[in-house]
Image (cartoon, rainbow, N blue to C red):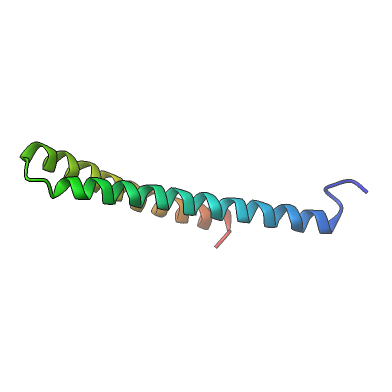
Length: 82
């Protein structure tokens, strides 16, 4: 039986893709939050230059996570996944 016609394999493939996507999202969020925390701590430095760099990068990393979530939710809504 061809791979595409076997319902069992189709379910397994869809489950694998969903699990793979969830793992990707978790790893991106974890990486982004560690960047925000690291540069947020740099924002607390007494040196004005280090504080400015830390604040700028932490804010940018946070906004990139927010915008990525917004774009992903709109893409999912267009694809009918929600």
